Image 1 (tube, rainbow, N blue to C red):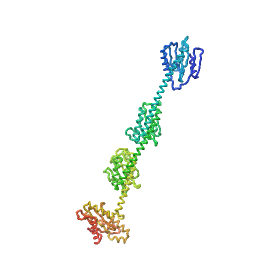
Image 2: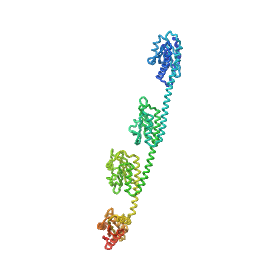
Image 3: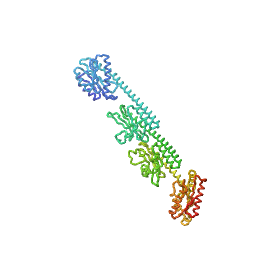
Image 4: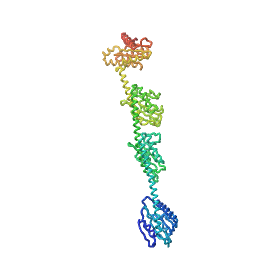
Length: 639
């Protein structure tokens, strides 16, 4: 018997062999060995043979055959699988199944003789029967061959069952893959039909949860997006090498982390569009068996979502741009409807608060003569008309640098002191210079009490609106300058006579009294003939300056004609006008160079007068002036 097992081992090494043992004439062996090729591993093959052996043994037991000996089932690697002895099946999991058949065989060697019959079946694996018959038995070897032949159908049946189970599993997997692909197609179709960023992100998460219910899904975006339906997390750029999400975003490809057993633990899929990567989808696997084929499918879905996200963003930005253009057009039209600076400032301040949903707005105008920024419009009454140094606070920074400014949270790091931010308890700020012809003429400040309130789009929009406010200010200033030039004498800087006539007429309609002083430079023709017309112009300018310094801002001084000047004093009595005229006369004598004198004629009106008119007032002043010049000049007469 030992010789049999030695020859059996040699047969397995040679793959094909035939032995005839003369010392045991009733024992013959033919072993054909082929390595497994249908996917059955060692344990699967053993299970197959055991199941077939059990089915065969049950059938044999039902037939109750008279078996003279013991049958052993052996696999192609010479390991014994099971034995059948005198009507009962014995599974061998001990020495027989561990490749040590000699111990069992040695126990039987003294009392039996053996015969090996190979089993031929459809599969590439081979097995065989070994029959042990008692010494002296006359049972022919055909009995063993019959047992082998009857075993083959059971073996083939088990193989077919396994093939059918494998096909069913493959069919199930195919159906599952087909379902996933159908869902992927539906998701792609739905994503491309959406034009809202929030809807795209929500649809992506919902579809992923449908496809894999045992997977946690997190969205991480590289840009601000405040979704109302799903949480969006920011990407972490501080630990790029350790964070697969950041690496996936930076490299634009999927990243997978495996468990020790090779299964997928987590995956990161980039949201890739035509113009860049917008974020990643992070998936944490809990109990689901996520395969690499699933990762490829999900990566396709993520890229589809990335394209849909990009399209929705572009649509959103285009709508925002159209809205901004409409807003700018409307604001520009309304700004240019007014040519009064105070109206422009007030309207701009009110509209900016509405546009940016801000808490406070402050518009400052630069006064170059005093080097100060003056608050011209604000919804904070305490700061109206307040003056600030040109280098103070955020308005000073904007004015000096000519650059716009955005502050996310003033409280965290207040490097620049700001009365506006501290008074209003504001934390967010956007500011922009008002520039006209390359020069800063003012500053716009818009604030909110919440931190991080203003976006970069708000920052850019304020820049555009500030430029249009600057254009409106330039138009109003130009209009005012033209108006000033129309009503102002270029030489003296005093008003023209027609403007004086209009203003006197208006005041006589609304006031209760007023006075008119007509001033004439004595011997002015002699000055021109003696010193020349340039000196004469200089004298006119000197006298006009003295008059300006002797009257109020509400008083109206005009050039009457030639060397004659006129001053209207609203709601000033005759006695007060005489004192003002005397002050002018005495200062002209003392301050002009070359020295000249002036004569003054005064008239007044009162609401109780019988006849009130501009002509009457001017006529009486003119008559008084004529009387002063005839009576010696350098004096004051009342009409």
